[in-house]
Image 1 (cartoon, rainbow, N blue to C red):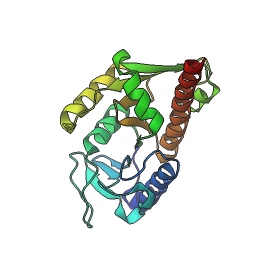
Image 2 (cartoon, helix red, strand yellow):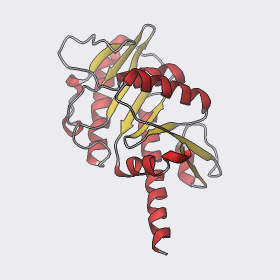
Image 3 (tube, rainbow, N blue to C red):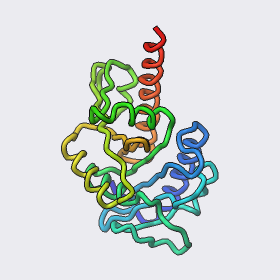
Amino acid sequence: MSSRPESFPQIAASLSSIARSFYARGWAVGTSGNVSAVVDGEPLRLAISPSGVDKGELDADQILLIDEHGRVLSDHGGKPSDESALHIMIVKERGAGAVLHTHSIWNTTLSDLHAAKGGLAIEGYEMLKGLHGVKTHQHREWLPIIENSQDMLSLAARVSDTLSKHTEAHGFLLRGHGLYTWGADPTEAKRHVEILEFLLEVVGRTLQLKQRD
């Protein structure tokens, strides 16, 4: 999971590129969304996007380095994402090398629509095989839905509890907020975002078509 400290510039460049691509696809408009990746595992050091920055214009030199308590270690100024505690929790719970968060129309809408069920099941689609460890379209992916909160420490605790209960999940939704997913590195995490965003749009559009019939 860990990388050498000198790999930070490469990780920062990868994260900024991913953030800009998410903006271009409408998954992180304005200042929404955040991205992170592990730089060192012991002690934990995370590269993470700063708070309040337009993801369509995010540069590598704006990426911050934080420790496992969310404290900024970078020489340059900047406030880390308000959701740093969630990124740190996911890294610890899943052993992830990167964590990505998007605010697309479909993930936001479906997170609210299915909240009462506690999650959203997706199965029967070939694209599921893009998720790590999934070998068949018959796979049933359960995306838990967690009530959103501005209390990040409390929310991080709920995320930890959810991940411990749903050990096979590749992501989760925050109600009215968006998608979190992760991977062994930024490349795999980006693929997971692309797969899950595709599937969420398929689910949403299918519901629309059924309502018209």
